[in-house]
Every structure is written in C-alpha cells, then in structure tokens.
Image (cartoon, rainbow, N blue to C red; front, side):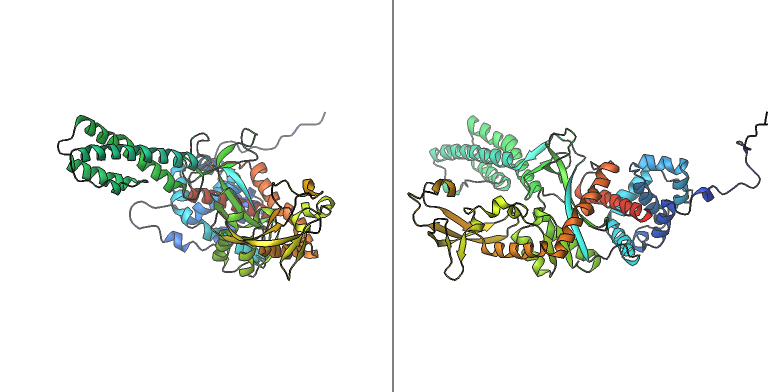
Length: 506
C-alpha cells in the first residue's frame, strides 16, 4: 500500500519570511483594473475640500477606489464594505490595508463624492473612448422606473390637495363674510369687496391682523370664529400651499421622500403594476457601456429627452451625431429639438409599427390614408366628398410646447352609406391634422426604414434593455437605498460605473 502524503501547512504561527498575500490576486482580476483606472483620475478638486488640522484623514483616492470596487462587486452597504475591508483580500488590496469604518465611508459617499461623481463618471467614459470601447458618436437612449426607498403607502396627490384647498378657501371666505356682516351691523367701516375669492396664507394672516385691531370689543361668536381661522384654517391653508410648492409640475409625491413621484411600475414588489414612489432613470449606452445617466421625476420618457441630451453635452462638450430611441420619445417637440441640435434622429413615433401592417395600410377611413390636396388644402373622404379647412387650434404639451393643428370638416355626411364605418359623430365628420408633426414623422420614417436605421433598430433592444436587465435582474438593483434626487443620482452613477468596469473586464 502506497504511503499517503499530505501538503505542508504553515499553521497559525507567523513565518520568518511571510509571503505577500496580494500575489495571490490574479493580474486579470477586476480589482487591479479599478486600481489602475482610479490612479489616473484627476481628484484634485476633492482633495481641496479637506482642511488641515486635527487628526489625519483617509486619502480620498483610496476611498474612491473602495467605493468603485464595492459597486462593481454588488456590495452597497457601508457596514458590509467596512467588514469586507478586514476580511476580503481584494478589498484589503484596493484599500492598501486601510480600514475606515462604516460612518467614514458613508460620510465620504454622501457628503464629498456626491458633488464630484458626475465628473469622475465622465472621466472614466473618456478613458473608454481612448481605449476604443465607445466613440460617443451614437447614443442608444431608454429609461426605466426604479422604486424609491420611501414608504410605498404614504403619498400626496395634486388633485386631492387642490380639491381640499378650494373647499377650505370657501370656508374661510364664508367665515370672513360673516364677520364682515357683523361689523357692518355695528356700523364699522370695512369694505367687503376687499375679500378675495381665492386667498393665500399671507393674505389671511394680514386680514386676521386687521380684524383683530378693529374688533376691540368682539363678541364671543366673533372671537370663536377668529380663533378657528387662526388655529385651524390658517395652518391647513399653509400646508396645502407647501404641498403644491413641493409638487411643482408633478401630480404626486411621497411623504417620506418628497422628491419621489408615484409611477406605475411593471415589476413592482407585488407583481401587479401598482403605483409606487419611484424615479425615472434615463441612460445612454454604446456597445452596452453606459455613457450617460440622468434622473427624472416625470413618469413619461417624452419630456426627459432634451434635458438628458443637454447634460450629455455639458459633460463631454460635444453632442452625439446619432440618437436612437423608441416610440416613447417620438414627439413634435423632440423632433424639432433634435433638428436644432443637428442630430440624426432614429427615433420611432407612436403607431410606427402598427402603420406598417396591412390592416392599417388598407383602411381607407383612417386620417393618414385620406387623400390630401396640398395646393388647395383639403382632404377627400372615402365617398369622394371634400373636407374643407375650417380653422386652426393650438395644443399645449405638459412642457408648455405649443403645436398647431388644422381642422377639417365634411359638408354633408347625412345619408352616406359608409357613415357607420367612417365615424360615429352625430354631425358631419371632423378631423384634426398636425401637418408639421406629419412632416417630421415622414422624415423619421425615412431614416428608420433606411439600411442604417434597420441596423440601429436591431441593435437598440440589445443595447439599453440588456443593460437594464444586467442592473435590475443580475445585480438585484430594483430599489434605491437613498432618498432625495441628488443622492439617488449618486447611487445610480456608482452602479453605472460598476457596470462599465464589469464590461471592461469581460
């Protein structure tokens, strides 16, 4: 029988010439890539934030390395990061054996890094350009809604605030009118016409001050009404005004994260598409690298495109030559904006795919299929009747963008055998046509149907949507851990950096 031989173990006793444990880390390990990249970043502005005196501080470059590597490794908790710095060889390597505690890491991330993360992110992307991974000449843009950290069931809705505020104003004006009537009965000179129908808290406060001076010998009822206005109605009115100020242009906000808006999530925790507090995260990608990030409070993608592109231009001092996006961004406002920026826009519009189908093309009753005489500006209905221009109207978007539509009407639909198929209105058929939007749609369609457009359309689903799949499914990032738009943006940019590092390693 052969003799069994076991490998030698050094045991727990120290060696005279101990080995370097960092030699055990492979040259191709992601931690070495993070170390090299962060060493080349310019962090002089971060260093200037530190003031002399007191105890020594951990070097900000080391802190940046630790945070970048943590998000690459899907470790987001400061306590877990602090623990890894004492247990994980890769974290020991990236920190140079430094062991900041979780409070130090959290303070650095939340107070120092948040103002400089955009600059660091764009610097890393510029490195990707130098290495040939991306060119920044094309942006594949899409958005996803990610749930906020806030309570899912405490919310404020604009409709409710406006309704209750209006009712409160009626109550206040009724009480003020009653007091006015009693004063006039006592022959005191107060002008009733001065009372506003809509009243704000400042006006009410001023009015109460005037009434308190004039009502020197107030009755018990008058005192009771004034006290109710002062202690009950005035605070409520101030609260409603505060709610409307927080809402801004939004329709809702969460009480525990006032910058989060309630949005319908496809993959919420209850799996039934309920409204939850969330942020609309927009990203640009190229070769599945994230090249730009912006966070928005509006649920729709349409209104986010201009600010997203403006911030891209601000980060890189250039704009991409081509933009590729889905139908959520196809609007007259966006097409006009992209033309002004001299960008080739491969952006779909609503019903782009539907209008390619035979059923839509062969439907003679649809507005887009009616014959239009450009010279004399009239349409022809399926029965051959002229539909004359009866005027124009303006339509205003939620962003304040004004569109002009032309209205056309048939002269006589009564007795038409095709009327039941053509329209269901009681009077003659009317249609509204936005000629400028139709022109922009035709330009977009021509680009989308071109050879280059077909290539971009085939790449878009495997560009942005694949990246969102990596972040939300593979990395389990389905809910923010910070509150407030600024910190949410910090968190997502760190996630985006982690994603880009993983791609570089792959």
